[in-house]
Image (tube, rainbow, N blue to C red; front, side, top):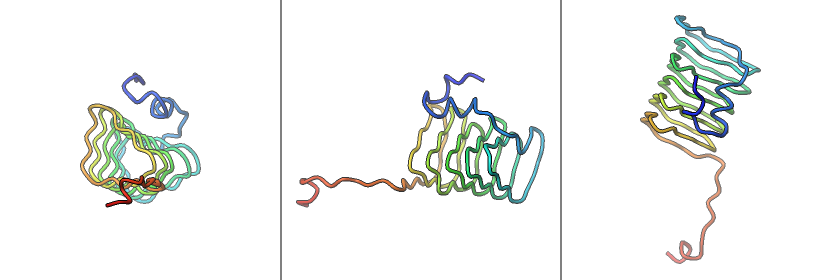
Length: 133
């Protein structure tokens, strides 16, 4: 995998991070997955994914459902909502159909996103000009 296709900061490092493969290629799983360590989804999963760490959706990975994780790298496909994320990175072949709730979002050129984005934990400073409206 060429990490130069993913944003230079966190995304590239996350793509190379040591993760446990939870759903392997050519595997279809449904249910609820809960992890206390970095995890990678390489196959098809339908349901809910919860992690206290990094979740990576591989290039051939597909999740249909909700994902709750502080760090999320999507290189494959996701149909569902991302909730309570601190940082989300969409790789160049990512396809996301759903809503994203995060503090930080990076979208690579070539990624596809259809849905709404809600930036949480962001304070917008009001300027004098905006106060005079």
